[in-house]
Length: 184
Image (cartoon, rainbow, N blue to C red):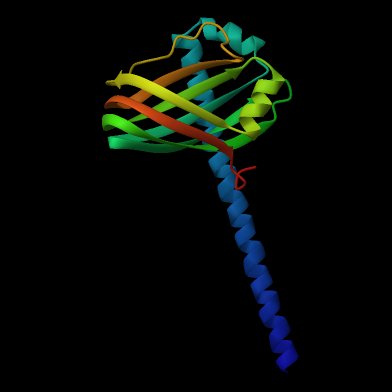
């Protein structure tokens, strides 16, 4: 009797575990779909607002698109998610990003960043190591604003779009990009 009860208990726990795995995968697939939709919309906007980017995109080994939110009140912090895509194979790597900084800042903004990678080494380095540090001084107001890179610089062209929000800042910030195990 105890063995039967133990077997039923183990079977029940296993079925719950498998059921939750299915739901986790369903949620991950839904999240990947949302990230892909934002990436596609952002690329469309990039090609419309910075037409020269289309030629760089065609030449690029790969690209990455991230949607981010950043808040600053003296110190700043933010985070977001995105996808890196090898152009020829279409292989996708889903990633997260986080940023923190110290400086003069007040406000918040939502923005998208597009990276175009000139070669495989630069792309692989970003996907596998994913670190980019920056020093920035910028002001964002309203819903407009696009970077205007027209060529690769050290193997990368970067475009940034402000979606909404108002932020004035001068800071030294660090940004980390990394693969997310839950979505890959």
